[in-house]
Length: 442
Ligand SMILES: Cc1cc2nc3c(=O)[nH]c(=O)nc-3n(C[C@H](O)[C@H](O)[C@H](O)COP(=O)(O)OP(=O)(O)OC[C@H]3O[C@@H](n4cnc5c(N)ncnc54)[C@H](O)[C@@H]3O)c2cc1C
Ligand SMILES: NC(=O)C1=CN([C@@H]2O[C@H](COP(=O)(O)OP(=O)(O)OC[C@H]3O[C@@H](n4cnc5c(N)ncnc54)[C@H](OP(=O)(O)O)[C@@H]3O)[C@@H](O)[C@H]2O)C=CC1
Image: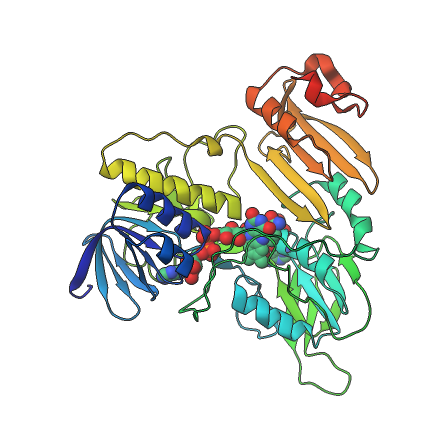
């Protein structure tokens, strides 16, 4: 049971990551009074004088009494609450100090510090962090252990992987100008885990190992981790040994567990009755509402449980956290004002723009034919070292695409996916490089 309620707010937002910040921005535009918890940005406080920031983690939530208790023992009531507490790395093991995850500034700094003294590391995982690390790390041998037959399983198929893999064997091009994406950061020490680093996190961080060699990556395909063992250090031995299911054992300075995220619901949500999805996320409906009254959730902590548009799926990404935070804020305000709100258009079509191995990567719709079974066909155009274009068609209509390189096709393809035009008559001409597709469909 929580103590005495210090103040009741109309809106309380838990979490100062991108989902929390956008939620706050949205409610602040419409209504006067709200509050955000832990690790906010001073930029935000300046922008919204009506914002009250509490620099303390939420220790417990009491949905029955509509109150939250912070780690410093204060209790606040809410009319509407939005949980934006993000996720944390799903580590291979919590127990071994030689197994690291990367999530926030502190963990990235720890990684950088250890890397600077490392001669060999093993990266486990085949998603976003692994793809970025194996390309960026220099001066250290990298063994990359992946479960699959090809690299990057969370983002693309074997064809795209084949296109990208030669980039690991050549030196990186000179760095271009650093990205100017706005960041909300704070110098204050974190009360717990900080916000996820997000896009461009390695810009400006020196990912240099202890040796004067350029990138050296060996990929171990189709294997998982059998055992991780720390032995007593003797001359010439490694601090940790990792045994893979392909029978190989590697000694290394440390292991990076780039093996996904788990939604951050522990321990502060205990004692309530939240419906949770199989991946541990708080189930939210098409109004971003959890199963508890007046409690919303957005970003990595939640699992979108409404009936998705056929061209959208959830992935725990910065863009989706921002869209969800923004939309959750809109829903909270609309519900207070008893106004109806419709699922936002941004959930119609999945789209993600990022960079892997120094190539622009655009993913649209069911870019890997997700959920389509054999009921789809693929068109592919590939020019080695230049571009890889894959289109997913179902019933003659475009349902997804992977665009790697400067293809300039994203806008046209986005429209073709959204308008579901029957493309049967165009056949393979759709990817004919001599046709200006933009003109074609104008
Ligand atoms: C290394 C790395 C690189 C990435 N690169 C990309 C990329 O290139 N593109 C992309 O789209 N996505 C990327 N992502 C994913 C993206 O960063 C996340 O999906 C997104 O930032 C999630 O935002 P969020 O606000 O939901 O959660 P978070 O950013 O995790 O924020 C959660 C917040 O809640 C706070 N919190 C937690 N518990 C409590 C509590 N009990 N009380 C109060 N506050 C609490 C935390 O301190 C934090 O401020 C990357 C992630 C990582 C780790
Ligand atoms: N540029 C971008 O868009 C980036 C996005 N991110 C995001 O940040 C978050 C964290 O990134 P990351 O940790 O790479 O997570 P991801 O979810 O992207 O990838 C996790 C990878 O680890 C694999 N995996 C899971 N468990 C094991 C295991 N026990 N042994 C071996 N492999 C395992 C997964 O395989 P399987 O899928 O088969 O379970 C998957 O390949 C993600 O939400 C990611 O989308 C991060 C960096 C860059």
